[in-house]
Amino acid sequence: MTFHTHSFSDWPFADPPNTVSYSTALVARQGYPVLRVSHDWEGDWQFLDATTERPGECVLLCMGCVFERDPSLREVASLPIGWSAARPAPGADWQCWEMEPWDDEEESSSSC
Ligand SMILES: [Zn+2]
Image 1 (cartoon, rainbow, N blue to C red):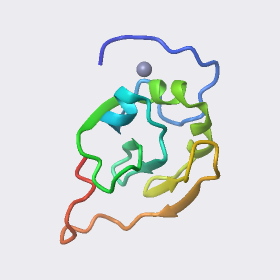
Image 2: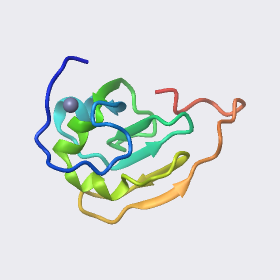
Image 3: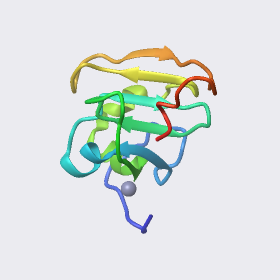
């Protein structure tokens, strides 16, 4: 990740803004809104467009850039580890739920 700066004035997440998070090519390159957020059991954040159950190509984005693009993500900044949140559209209310702990027998759909 090359050095760059962000322009927001406050930062709602506990992780620093330059933390690398996982996103999809649609969010990173085509400006799709983030509709699904996961704070996975390893502490990584995922910001996904929710257009598919299988995110496909995984793109690394720093959290600062994700938040800069969509400050409404502050609403999920306190999402605990092991929780996911989803919303039907930008600006809609988030629904949060606790994810199942890693289950190796499950096909690994989150192998992002
Ligand atoms: Zn950034």
